[in-house]
Image (tube, rainbow, N blue to C red; front, side, top):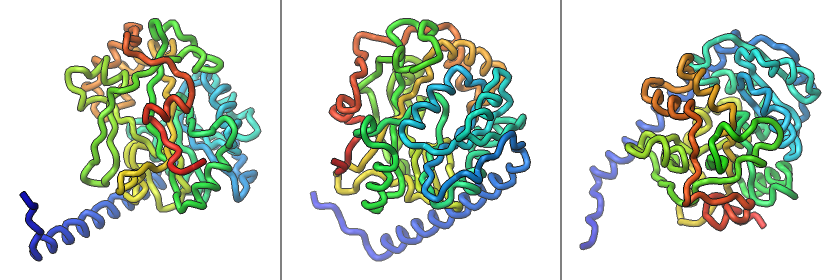
Length: 350
């Protein structure tokens, strides 16, 4: 049966609803920017090397707490990709993270004892730094357990990638989070060095994709965390979509981690004609032995989720040192394998 065409009143209502939504999102963007700028007072500089940032610098913005075991390889990975300066906020580490970062020549460090959760899980601090130092520069916004890869990343650095994106009129690169895990219990995968030496397995085919109504952004769920920890209610599983690399403007803002941003067009990284746009993957190296102690700590602190009680069972299960591997797990072989599985895309970049 042919679908009835929308009448003039229906079209008018649709245009009104779209205009109203645009205004609401813009008001939200402005409100989030105001609170981010207000968070500047919570940041105390430890070492400020931002005068060294060049006009064509590629920046990485990181909020962290007690990540000393991961930091050396994290910095090595992103330096090898072409990041030229790191803007780091240390949220009360007591393991030497801040001092280690302050000793690095390409790092600027701020500290804060303010509540991570009250700062929108660090987004207010990150957005403040992005606005001050990232305007009209390509910027990565990352967690220390995230290692970005993209097609040809072994031979083409971020300068090559972003120059190509600029040439295509694209100002962002989306990346799905891919949870990696060991063959045995998570506590058997030691932190330190290259985490991919121990985390070599992933879930390949249990992902769902929807488009959210408000900002028209992709919402990907699935992977090992949904399979193991949220099997009874997959809709409570973590959001895996992110847009970590953006040519930043000082009036941009992240909304929910780097899962979505405003203005809303930054979330429209799928081709409406069904084709593919370029994308990467954030190799999520959460499941090392440190996750056991961190989960026990988070049960007490309750700083990482808007509704911590909903995730109490999740943290409790992680604190028990589980084995996440199953017979359907796939061993990691490289970006071409991941492209063949549909988890990242060249999108025309050859």
